[in-house]
Image (cartoon, rainbow, N blue to C red; front, side, top):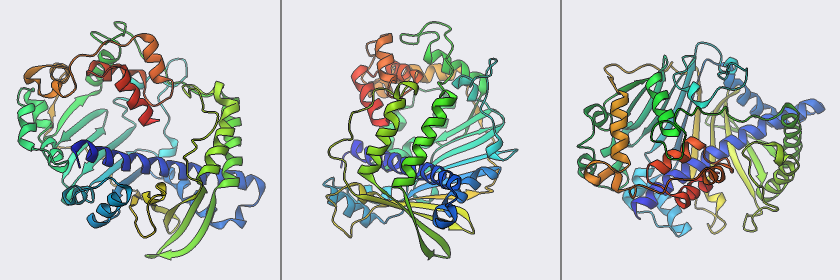
Length: 435
């Protein structure tokens, strides 16, 4: 199994699982709201339990979620064999230890946090989120034994980061010494960050650098000094109609079944008929497609190869609080025979410890970031830049518009990828993969 295949597998596992969990949360909350309006909630106690549990997440001042493969290395190997994509023993062992954790904390209940607003009262531009002091968060990717491979934190308006690039190289079967050679010419602070040492950046540095990538000096296709536009929002009437349509769909298609106790926790199975749900959602969105920003052109029908089968996920509740969500990825492939599984788990926590700033972090300057970006986009040694194929043809405004229509990538991301050496077709593939 190649390094690219390993990375693709890890990314696919994470992407599919996060999407599944978000769908489950939306289904349960919207469905319960619709049933409550009809006065039938008490007849569906399992749905009520799940809806209440998701609703309680915002009552706390903190939140944590941890995504992991809830399977042994042997199970992962068997899954690869069943799908026809062989996974070696070393890769399976590595994947079985990887976890992704996210934590949020604030000085008020999370449901009471407000999105940053501009002077006109509309949602602020994306850069306003950088350095937001109202919310602290951490994002951590760990490997065997809980060893940190990548961690980002935002505390008190400052961003902190560390990465173990050599450790990640080992995880995907690469030689860590080659990684160290690639980073030898980087600024000492950046090199330290890639070797597991903490660095920090203030909000102003991040905002200036973000603007320079998107449309400031040297940004491909951008206008100097350009400011980002506010994120698009739904009109109130459109939002109300869409919510009503989703309630109707989920009320018909999503089912909840109380399965009793598992390890002392309440277990509720949430099931959906995959093809019927996709068809009903498409019908719900089609009349409103023109009113939803960045939605792009909708297909006239769901893909013919979409399986017509039920997909199920288990929700575990601990004294009414959301404890975990598990989903078996084997359900997504009809070729897999019964008995083969690849369960994915997201464990949730309330009242988690507040995110703290790490001690001894070295400050990263704008000059450091510029130097790093120069290396990536084709600078020294050819190591970092060479891997991305060198400079790419600058995108036209029409190409940028096309690449952002589907909602998979923002304009900032598109222009950044282009500056990193990716051309139109390569970025298009990324955009499609993220939709």
